[in-house]
Amino acid sequence: MSASSIRKMRKEDLAAAGKIRKSITKRKAPKNWEKEILVRLEDKENQCYVATTGKDVIGFIIGETKTLDFGVDKSGWLVEVAIDPEHMGSGIGKKLGKAMLNGFKKIGIREIYTAVRWDSTDLLSFFKSIGFERSEFINLERRMKK
Image (tube, rainbow, N blue to C red; front, side, top):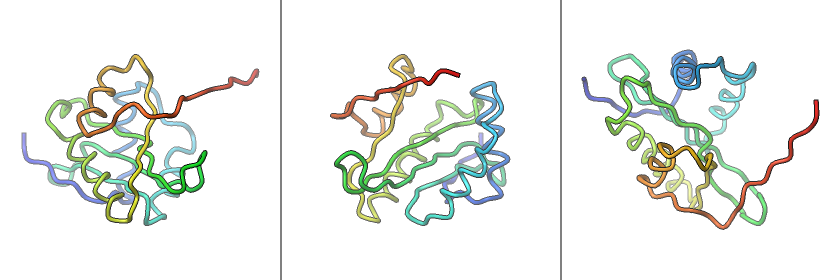
């Protein structure tokens, strides 16, 4: 396996990122997924990166900034991370996570959050490996009837 490098995500990476996402979730991305990512790429404070080998995108991470969320002045949020299944377990996710965290640190953001299902032990292990801990927040949801 060749070495991977990390760089900022670009618009032309979205198709490859979508394929990686689909290979993991086994579903097509939501209809406006690419548009939502493009909006994030336009904001220079957001921290969106890809891992590549040669010209191939083999993983990505999407981090965004939020302001005035529930008493937190300005924070970073890890929105999505995905690694091509053929490259899982090779440390690429950790490299992407560190790039995102360093990007947030450079712009002065000290609090970074994410949300994960309680039974996603692989993701929980990943987040712990890059320094995430249980936060003071509790996620709540309200499902609307169709």
